[in-house]
Image (cartoon, rainbow, N blue to C red):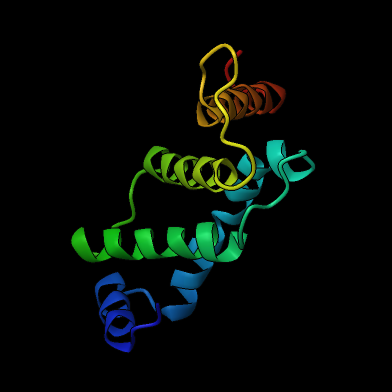
Length: 129
């Protein structure tokens, strides 16, 4: 939700200007896209509005973190975890929530798929094997 006072406080505590804050936060868009790729063409479809339920929420979380931590962003690992949590939660809603015969809830299967996919992308990018 848009809150003028919050926006003003964010810019004051950030201290580097509005365009710089937007630019810094937009640097995380490729990370969001990377984590969405396993689901993009999947059979589950989009169970909601991705912009509202992932991108906007991530922005709110980062804004809160900035306010609570003297204008500092979380570590990259923490941001990646925030993105993972939001993406997995988004794609876990809607559709069938039946527990498969192996008793693994759908969410856990999505997390496993997500982890395997991001691990493989890291390998392909020359990261850890």
